[in-house]
Image (tube, rainbow, N blue to C red; front, side):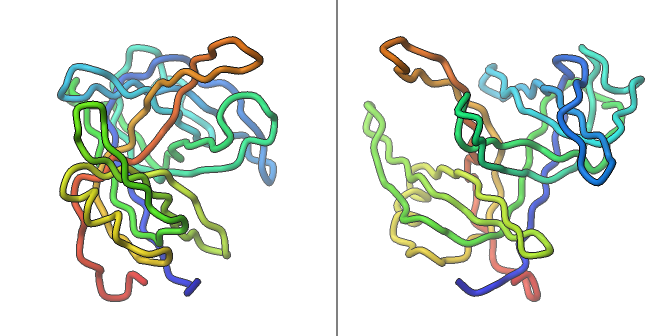
Length: 205
């Protein structure tokens, strides 16, 4: 697949749902994770996992509203516990929010790396499932599940593997039930809901 420079920018405003806890260390830098609750216009919330280095203890307090800028990251979970693909938001900058209302805006540019799948909801609405590879520097990439609805779903379903997409949307969480060893288990999936397709920018790829 041809190499290109991806785009990965997310803006969030939400309420801190718990205290930061140590996640891991990389190159002697400690990274912490915490959940952020981001309300939707529908009245439901997305509970998104943040990861950051050296969090400000005065900012990341449960119940505190924050604005942040960052990037969506993914990695494969090889522990055998929970979802196989883990999606988080790497926080680049953050500040106290002036308003208490949800913001969830994501811009991605990447390439389709799996054949799109078109399906229908029980009410007959069309949905297309995509997997987008978004390149990082130094030869790495994030693999992000995406969904498109309605006429966008029809358009995306016809795109072959390798097609480049420049999109804006939101990162959302969704709970589902899975049978493991004969017992139902509730898990959370994270996916990008595509709102619009954007033109390719000069130099982006």
